[in-house]
Image 1: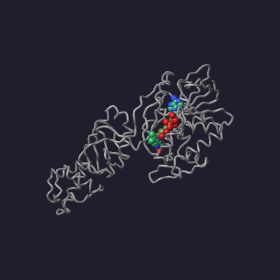
Image 2: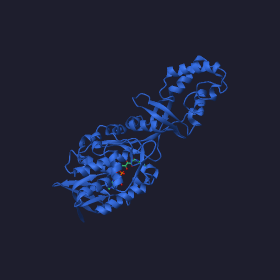
Image 3: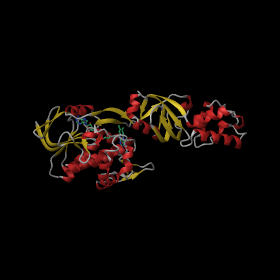
Image 4: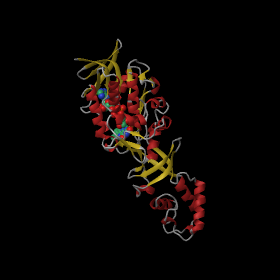
Amino acid sequence: MNQNFDIIIVGGGAAGFFTAINIAEKNPKLKIAILERAADVLQKVRISGGGRCNVTHACFEPNELVKFYPRGEKELRGPFHQFCSGDTIEWFEKHGVELKIEEDGRMFPVSNSSQTIIDCFLKATQKLGVQVLTGQSVQSIFKKDSIWKIDTRNHQFICEKLVLATGSNPKIWDMLQQQGHAIIAPVPSLFTFNIKDSRIKELPGVSAQVSVKVKDSKLASTGPLLITHWGMSGPAILKLSAWGARILHDKNYQFSIFVNWLNDIDLEEAEQLLKEIKQEQPKKTVAKKSPFEITNRLWESLVLASGISSETKWADLSKIQIQNLARQLTNATFQVNGKSTFKEEFVTAGGINLKEINFKTMESKLHKNLYFAGEIMNIDAITGGFNFQNAWTSGFIVANAI
Ligand SMILES: Cc1cc2nc3c(=O)[nH]c(=O)nc-3n(C[C@H](O)[C@H](O)[C@H](O)COP(=O)(O)OP(=O)(O)OC[C@H]3O[C@@H](n4cnc5c(N)ncnc54)[C@H](O)[C@@H]3O)c2cc1C
C-alpha cells in the first residue's frame, strides 16, 4: 500500500510534533503525516522533568542561551534569533498552556504535568488534520526523481519533503550515512561521577558551592556540587559531564578531579585565612565549627583528612597541618571510577555533523527537501529545559522554511 503525503515527519517526539503543528498551521492545505515506530507518541515528553516537563529556560537572550549548548553553541545563534525561549512561552500560551518560572530559571507548565504538553500537541494535530501513524518503524529512505520513498515494515510512504526527527536513533543515523551524511559517533552526556572516598562516604545529601577541574584537561566548572551515595552530582558535575562528554568517554570514565570546596578562594588565600583564624580563636576546637561557607560535617571530614584529630585546638595546629587543610579545602583530589545516570535524565552527544545542515532552514546541504529537527543533530545541552528548546527552535525553523 502506498500512502502519499506532501510532508512526512519521521519521529513522534517533541521535535516531530512541534514541526508538524507549525507546518500545518502555516499551510493548512498540505497533507502531513507523522510516522512513529512505537505504539505511543511523545514518550520522552511524558517522563521528562520528573513527569513535569521542563519545557524551556528563562534565558531570553540568544547569545546567552547558546552558552548552555556544549554542541551547537555556534550553530544555534542564528536559529535562536528566529525562535527563542520567549517565543516558546508565547507559542504555548497561544495554544492554551501557561508556563511558570522556577527559582533556578527552569520553566514548567503551571499544571506541573507533562500530560498538559502532550494534550496540547495531540489536540493541535487532530484539529489540523495531521495524521499520526504509530507502529510505523522506518526501515529505509531513498529518493527517486525528487520524491522521497519511505519504507516501514509493512507500508511504503511517498512524500515531497521529508523531516527526520528521530532523536538519537542509531538506525536512522546508519540510513543517513548511506545517503552520504557524516555522523558524529554518539556518546552519553549528563551523568554523575562515581567516587568511592572516605572523605565523602558519610556525607550523602551535603552540598557546597564549588569549582571543579578535571586533571590533564581544560575542563572546569563552578556551581553547586551534591554529594550522593555513589559519588558526586549537582550542576557543577553535570556541566563537566556535558562539556566533557567526549573527553571523559575517551578516558573510559576513569580520571581525577580537583575540587575547590571554597569556590573562589585559592590555596594561598585559604592558608592565610586559616592562620588568621588560629590567631583569633586559639582555644577553640578546629573540627567543631566550619569557619567557611561549607557545612560543619564537610568541614570536619576535611579537617580529619588533613591529619588533624577531632580534639585539636586551633593554637596547636602545625604549619604542615595548616598547609594540608588549605589543600583539602581548595585543591582536593578525587578519583572518579565510572558514571551513573542523573535522575534517569540523559541526552546523547553526537548525531548529524552540523556542517552538513543549513541552519537558516534546517535543510540538509546534501539532499534537497530533507530536513532535520531535534536531537538527531549533533546538538545537546546541559539540564534545565535547553534540550527541548532545541527541539522547538529547529522544528519552528523547518516549518518556516517549508
Ligand atoms: C528521562 C529524561 C528526562 C528528560 N527531561 C528533559 C526536560 O525536562 N527538559 C529538556 O529540555 N530535556 C529533557 N530531556 C531530553 C529531551 O527529552 C530530549 O532532548 C528530547 O526529547 C529530544 O526530542 P526529539 O523529538 O529530538 O527526540 P525524541 O524525543 O527522542 O523523539 C524521537 C522519536 O522518534 C521515534 N523514532 C526513532 N526512530 C524511528 C524510526 N526508525 N521510525 C519511526 N520512528 C522512530 C522515537 O520512537 C521517538 O518517539 C530528558 C531526557 C530523558 C531521557
